[in-house]
Image 1 (cartoon, rainbow, N blue to C red):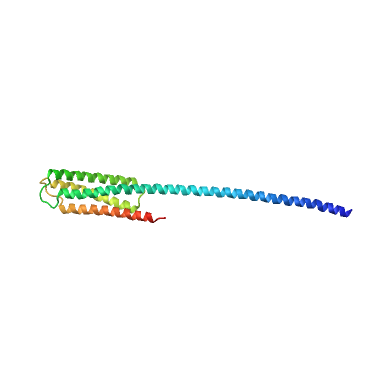
Image 2: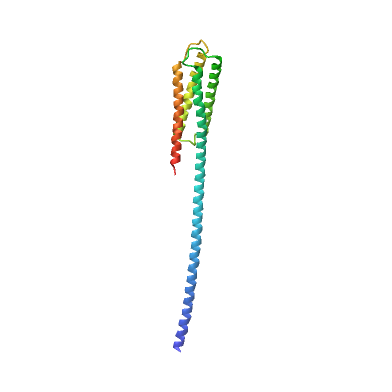
Length: 205
């Protein structure tokens, strides 16, 4: 009789323990599965956040780069015009000649003078628009070019008038030649700094 009781007891306990083990095993799998889902969702969210940040940074950098490139494209055209006009200005003045300017030369040199003033205006406008997008060194050399051109307005005007009137000379031919050399050197320096900047950009990964 005792044997039957013990057998029944162990059988009952064994079934309960088995059930508990099954429940614990199942519960463990459910918990692990839930943790896996949560971790995956968290990882996906973090990846999306990082992706959005990277996308914003990429777009911001591209915007900065696009505006910088626009400045280089515009300034390159303005510098080409300026170099031609400065050389034409000297040519039409005929600084190495003693004869007064002909009507054609006078009108030509005044037209060139006007174009130089207009080009300087365009350079200033372009620099103002792009000043937040270009390196400081490019900004500085371009500002220096603008300053030298503006300093040359009065001497250029005076030399024109001196060549068509009997007014007392207030500016010499040599001073005008020096002004020309200064502006051309400024143009070369702006071109050089832009070239170096583009070379640096091309080396970046």
